[in-house]
Each structure stands twice: as C-alpha cells, then as structure tokens.
Image 1: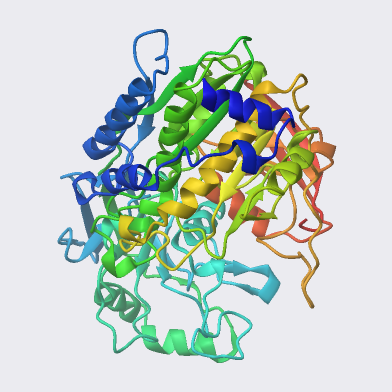
Image 2: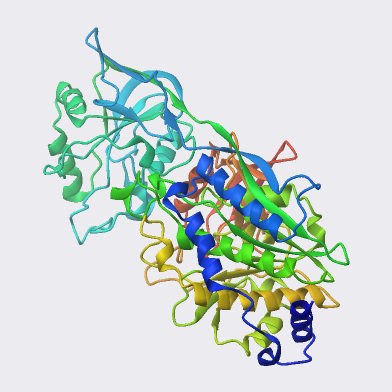
Length: 605
C-alpha cells in the first residue's frame, strides 16, 4: 500500500520525487531475468523454436507470481501462427538439356536454391542478363531491349565497376541494386521465368566459387520466382557455346557501363524442381492483466524473441549458425516488463488497469504486436497509452532516447515534468510513433505510445550481445522512472488524446532527386506479416501521397504500374526505381475488391 500511495502522491504533485521514491527495483534481480533469457540454453530465442517457448513459460511464471490475471482466467499465452525459416526439402533437381543431351547437376555441390525461392517445377530457355540491374538513376539497364518473358535469366553477383572508386555505382560500398532480392524483384517485374545466379568470378578471381549458404540470405519468405545458384564453371560453358567469355563480358561492362546481355544458344534449356519447405509454427505473446477501477488500461510491452542462430539477420555473418543471445535485444526490455509487473502487482488497485505484454515475432516484422492489436484481448479503444521498451540494458552517459511523445496530447508535458526529478538525460527522438519496434503496431490503431531505447552498440544482432554487458543499475533507474510515468497515466482524470504526427521533413542531399532514404515518399506503413500475395497497409500517414490518392489502412497493394507486387521487397524495389514528382498507377484490394489510384510521389520526409 505504501508503495502505491507514494507513486500516487507523486503523480498528483503533492510531493517531490526525493520525498517519495525509494529504490523499489533490484538491479540484481533484474539482471537475473536477463541472464536466464539470454542464456546459452535458450539459444537466442528464435521465433518458432522450443527455446523461445521456454522463454514464454518463464515470463508467464513471473506474471503469475506478480499476481496478474491470465487471459480469460486460463492462460497467459496468446497463440498465433508464423511461417518459420525455410528448409531445403529432398527433391531439388536441376537438369540441363543441351544439344539433345541431358545432364543433372549435383544438388548442394553444383547448384542450390535460395531460401526465398518459389517452389515447384519450372523449365525454359536461358538469357544472359548481366547483373540483372535496372538502375535508372545511373542510366544503366541490363534488361534494355532484352526479351526475358518466360525465360530463365542468368545473372552475375554484385554490380558493375565495384572496384572503381569513381564509379557511379558502388566504389567500395554496394548499392541496393546488388541485393539478391532486388535482382529477384527486377527479374520478376520483367516477366522472367526464374533466376539462375552465378558468382562474378571475373572480378573475384582470387575468391573460391562457393555456393551461397541456404539459410543466410535475406529476402522475402517467397519471392514468387525460382532463384537458384549454379557453379560459374557450368555457366561459362554455356557462354562459350554461344561464342562468349565470361571474364571478357564483365570487363566490357566495367569499361563503360555498357550492358552485354544476350540470349544463349537456342538449344539450351533448363528444368528446375525447387523444394523449399516453409513450416507454420504456433508461437505466443505472453499477456498478463492487472485490473483497475475502470475498463481503461495502459499497455507496457517489450519483445522477447531474438534471432536464434542469427542466419540471414546476423550482423556478424561469419558467426551465423551460432546462438545470438540477445541480452540487450531484447531480454533487457522483457526483464523490465517482468519487474514492472512485480512492482505494480504488489500495490493497490490503480484507477486504470495495466496490461503487461511480451511479444513474439518482433524480429520477423512486429508480428506479435501486430497480431495483438488486430486480435486484442482487452478493447483496443480502452487502451490509454502503450509504453514500449526495446534495448534498455546498456544506457550510456545517463542518456535514454524517447520516441512517440507527439502521439498523445499530454505525453510530452508529463514527460518533461517527471524528467526534472531524474538524473537520466532523456533525448526526444521521432515523435510520430512509427519505428522499427512494437509500439508502431499500436500507433496504427490510434493508441498514444512512448518508446524507451538506450541506443545501438557494436554488439547489436551479434553473438556478443551477452548478459554480462548489461548495466542493471541504469536499467532499474529507468524502470523507476517508467513506474512513475505509468502511475501518473493510471491516476490522471483525463486520458491523452491520440494525435497523428506528420513525418518530419528531411533535407535533400546535394545532387539528389529523391531525398534521403530509399526512393521517393509514398506514405504507407506496411504490415510486415506476409500475405499469399501483396502488401497490406497497416496505416497510411496523413497528408502523404498515398493518403492524397485515397489509399487507406487495410488496403492490400497488389499492382504497381501494371506489374504484380507479391511482397514488401517488390514494393520497396518498385518505389526505389521512381523519382520525386512522378505519378504511378497502383491497384489495391479493399474488402476484396480492386481499387485503382494514381499516386503522385513526393520528396521523402
């Protein structure tokens, strides 16, 4: 009772923080939670793994010990389905028919599908399409005057002139055109049957012609097109039969950026059978409820999943396949939710209730929080605010970044008032409530949000993000502040009203026609949960090109200038290919019915 009265007194302004705040949060206990969640036994808490389910059970046990109510009086777990990482099946084949003779490549040694390849049986002739790049901004197009419809395109890795520091392309840093999924999207947009990919051995003669490791390639779950790699020596024979030399072709492209694309021998055809298996797994958000005197509630959340063994998301690619323990990202935030649940669960009933949540699937695209806001167990319109903690365990120089302050009418003045009594230095970052963590899902449902974050570091998304680097003292200091802020929200007579904050304008760099970021500004907020085809908008920013064209939250983008949009990567690639001021015709599905719109692209904000 004393604890709750203290926070209530502070919330109502009847005493100073020094008079009422005691160290109610134990840094050792906090670090013990982190230590368990980031232990080697949990192997990085990859989504869909047994280890992540062990983490869910641990969090549920802590919620129960804190006295929270389970969902529907039964369980703290909210189940939903996700597509896990792809695995190679046993039926992958690539057959070459040349001059009436058939040769079957050795799967795993001479060819391998990429993990985002479409599965099925495909056959066709082959066209060499250079690097598979259409870079309008550099006046370079490997597909210029090249008919690839219903044909396989043979593509080189990387991009032209990669070792030329004066190149309009990369110099020492590759552009987005070199990304595998960019090559896949571009090939599909040109009507190709599939992609056959080879290492650019002409520019990398000292490197071994190694096959790409299946599980480590970033891309969509399904690119909608078969994408396989073969040994370069196999393709070199194809080119030789057409009177061409691979190294000479690359040298000609590099010399003056003149594409060297052409059809291969008409007697050459390939048949590919791709067997990539994507399994559905049941995962769980962990949800506990502390009832209040009213039906209104505050949500305090953090994601508890991480990268598992890293695979294509690792920032240390050479260590992919080893546990990425994720102490700061985000065992630190999850442990904060546990400790706040313990703290408030031991006090008196607040005026407004508090929902404590640990989200699954954040690293795969905010999947858990997105599922919750679309299937809320407590009315989303009764959510007064959402407080998200993602990476709070390594606060440096007392600095904490706070996002979302502009989304609620009372959040910023409340924050500024309470910050006066804290030794933490709060830096107010993006006020819009949109970002790469779970608060974004609540912003799309017009719930005011606050996002606490201690900043990136050199161990981000690496196996070296370990529990011993967590600063438990600083983290629990932040938890004390969050508890005070939550107590104020719980006790206030009026709730903050949601405010849609326009995206801030960003300066255009010298010589840029698109502004910063990737391509011009469109204005949609994507739902990262992949559909069978298309991209669902979880929200549309006010006064954006998409909003001005009449597009709405819930629309599913399926077509861009007559070309299909199968996934978010297709959409991103299509947008990057355009310039500020261009008008594009798009097609969306709204309540299952097609709606067309002309969107005038603007400078990125």
